[in-house]
Image (cartoon, rainbow, N blue to C red):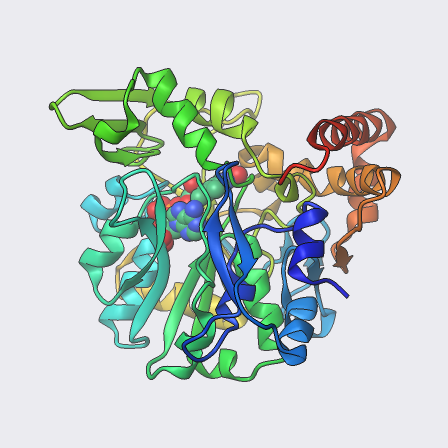
Length: 410
Ligand SMILES: Cc1cc2nc3c(=O)[nH]c(=O)nc-3n(C[C@H](O)[C@H](O)[C@H](O)COP(=O)(O)OP(=O)(O)OC[C@H]3O[C@@H](n4cnc5c(N)ncnc54)[C@H](O)[C@@H]3O)c2cc1C
């Protein structure tokens, strides 16, 4: 059985907040905290009941990513998971398209849901009101709030940290999160029927991993920011596609950095360990998942030059597909067709990601760490496709990281 101490000690926590969110009443049993390593982690602050412990063990996405094939409404693609519909899309609201991460498809769908009255509110993540360089759970009830929350924030987030209170409150909502957040909520739905009653849609974005807040600080420092407390506004990207990381300072100066440098040279070196063994970077448990719809050069490599935003839009359930069609019919979302086999050129990292998982799990076994339960994800097919050389390299990399980590939070 996995409890939060075992989960953290084995490097399996993704910081989603599900365990903390299971608490009811005024005295929480578990609270989410920022750690000195710049991660979000749960801490026990009261007694955890046996029932709550059992739900954590079964639903925590850090230790469980388990498909039930009976739940799939489309054939399972070994790399891209269940896909009912595949498109490239963007928001028809030009301001939203520009402000969003890669085309604003997610925000366009959310806005459609709110305008049409299908949901009462959205649970998502935005900049914290307390600090321009921190994230916070954010509730939107209209287009302007969705606009405010649009854009990727490459730092820890815990969008499930008040989930039980939300499930007990009036109103139906759409939930947006990282693939692990959505997997946690879907796994909770298997044992808690309030989820299907209250959560109308689960939306995700593809995710290459969550960088710690140390990554945010490293980006700011590399931009030339000497004193983080003088930052008045910060975005990781957006305001264009992919847009620039931009820090606005109290004295009116502005620092910027291009996406290729901020993500490719800095943030991706600050990923938490759990993301290194992630078998679902592509939101397989969501109703709809969106991702960057990069244009490719003649050799098929993604280009990061500034363009008008474009997102990949994959519907994974019939209800997700029907929602995409409704948002298109209402002219909130514009789309063009996408062949599934094209996705590997647009998202080359995600295309090989699942193959990296088993070698890294092997490294965990060698180091005496407890392994998570990953089920029905075609991991064997993917490691076979990756080949021996890459697998060995992947395993050695994980071993090195675990040796270096020692007892530290990873
Ligand atoms: C940590 C991280 C890693 C990512 N890795 C990839 C990747 O490997 N490949 C890829 O194609 N795309 C990745 N993305 C997603 C990508 O940047 C876009 O979000 C995606 O293309 C959808 O764009 P959009 O314009 O449709 O979304 P938007 O309309 O801009 O909406 C973005 C949504 O994401 C939510 N959000 C932003 N940051 C967070 C966060 N930290 N935690 C939870 N929710 C958040 C917002 O609340 C908003 O609802 C990543 C995003 C993050 C935050």
